[in-house]
Length: 267
Image (cartoon, rainbow, N blue to C red):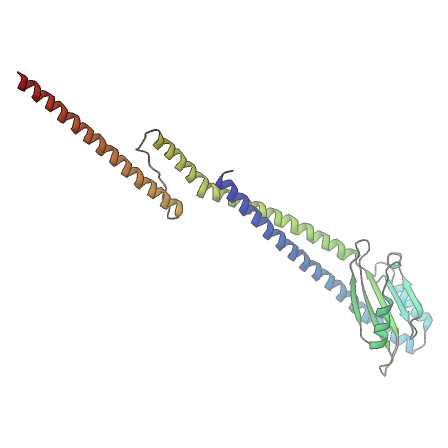
């Protein structure tokens, strides 16, 4: 395998590793951003529902609560399930769409909210049916916790956005990788492959006796230094050859003159 080919493959492998790592990080960041937006959205809705439910509970209007919950989960509302639990975590009122019926909220989180009085917001990363949910404490005017509110939003839209963002990242990185690969190939071809090929041709010509060949490379890098050294060597070899030829011709002329003198002396 040629040096230029090896170098090209090595650079392409390095670029591929860097691009893959960058793509993974970008996809992860985009996923985190979209899931955070989904959690924030469901939290805002849950807080609004919480105020309405707490007001209805204080007025002791269970029928109004059921009607309110049913209305909220109707399409195209962004809420898919609402459940209200009392202090014993028994479901006292709920409404849900079909898509959210199988979404499971850990019992431990309901107990934690009831005990601590703090809101919990989560994103369930389930490929078949992802969901964002919020669990909030229901309180009296004096701040006593009287129950728990659960709000679930099936985040199929978020999942679709994540997939679209991932596909977009793959397309962009693929185009960028191809562009970089083309630039690397052209650079290696112009910077290494052609000069080395020219050096090989000139060296072969030298081997066949053509000492007049020179490398014409106007570069200041290592290959340019190699070309300059090669040309200097060629000049030295050509000068040495010319000197040898001159000395041989001089020697032949002297021998011819000596032979001529011997003939004259014999006469």
